[in-house]
Image 1 (tube, rainbow, N blue to C red):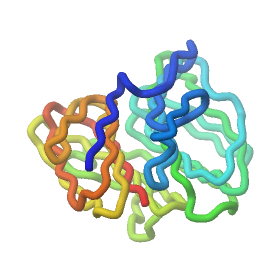
Image 2: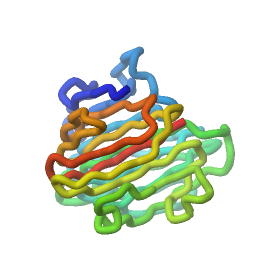
Image 3: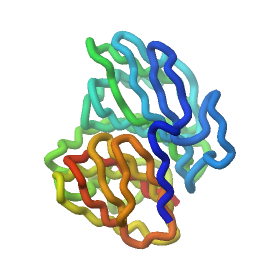
Image 4: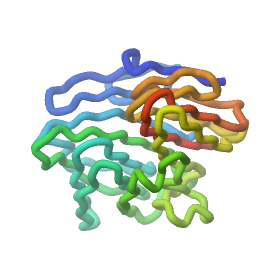
Length: 232
């Protein structure tokens, strides 16, 4: 089953400094049919105006993955971590028993990003933060694991969940396969471009909720940048 969730039909709103779309129920947007997808709880498509951002606020018991599409985001947290994550790179925050953080766009241009929340395997624990560059050339023509809760994905950023976040870049006409497994929950969004997933067309910033599928075959209809969550 592949359920298309068109970008134009997503919840969200324009708050001036933040233009956001929600693939799942979040903040003031509530749809009982879109509370989660397996242990994937949130996928927000955010555009943050220059010299603005999210002031310090708390989180607990959530794995929060930020995939920067354009510009950069600057992170600060109550553990003393600071870092700037730019387009193509990824940051992960394991909120654990509790952490406060701020995310600011200190750039002269709009920052665009995906913020993905995945439920952890266990509650509590020491919070943590990390970031890593993932050159698009390394993802050319194939899916690369960006963040993972599995020990054998040792090049990925660690998360504390039965899940993976993957990225790929495909030229028009190229295809890439991914062994999802029928019992898993996949969620794929093209950051740019358009693809067919097992024959279903998915446009830029549309979401595709996938289950009961052993192998995903993704064919690019145009040059495309993809993000995929493989969730329990």
